[in-house]
Amino acid sequence: MRKIVVLSFISLDGIMQAPGAPEEDTSDGFQYGGWTVPYSDEFSGNLMGEQMAMPFDLLLGRKTYDIFAPYWPTQGPSEVSVPFNKATKYVVSGSSPELTWENSELVDGDVVSKLQELKQQDGPMLQVHGSGTMIQTLLNNDLVDELWLKIFPVTLGSGKRLFAEGTTPAAFELIDSKVTPRGVIFANYKRAGDVKTGSFD
Image (cartoon, rainbow, N blue to C red; front, side, top):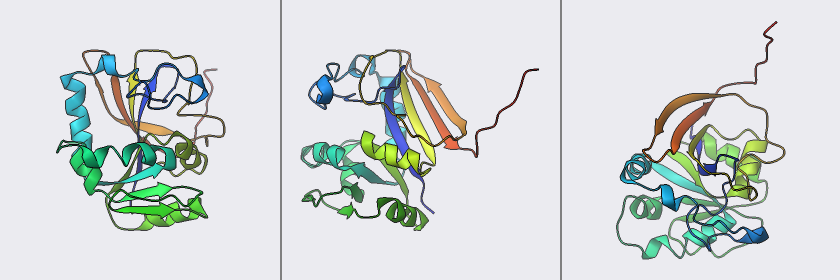
C-alpha cells in the first residue's frame, strides 16, 4: 500500500501560497511570493535533501504541474531535479491537459476512487508538493497519510491556506521534528485515528 504524503511550506497563519518566488502564484492579488526565501540555510537544505532522497512518485494538481513541467526538466542534476524527473507524475485535472513532462499520467473522472485505488498499489510513497486545491480534496476525503510541514516564523494575512473549509476532523501523531537556526520548524505527522475529546473537570 502506498502512502500519500503532503509536503508543505506554511506560515504561522496557515498560508501555503507561492512560497518560492514572487511570480509563482499571484492569484487573488497575493503580494508575498517568495516568503520562504529569507529563511533558507544549509541546515534546512540538508533536511529537504533527506526528504528528497527517499523513493517517491509525485501526486500533483494541474496548476503545480504546469509550473513544474517546464522548469525541472531544464535544470541540471540536483537533489531535487533528479528524483522529480525520474518519478512518475500523477496529475489530477478535470480537463485534458497535454502532459509533456516524461512519466506523467492523468488522474481524472472519479478522482477520489482513482486515488484510493492508487494507494492500494505497490510502489513508493506519493509526495504532494504545492497543489493547494488538490490537497483540499485529499483532506476532505481523508486520503492524507502523513503531513511533512515546514512552519515559518511569519504571518501573511491572506492567501491560499493548507487547511481550508471542509477538512475532515482527524488526529495526527508527531513522528519527527527539527528546528532550523532561522526558526523554521520541520514537523512530520502521521494520521492517528479520530479526534478525541475530554474534560479538565
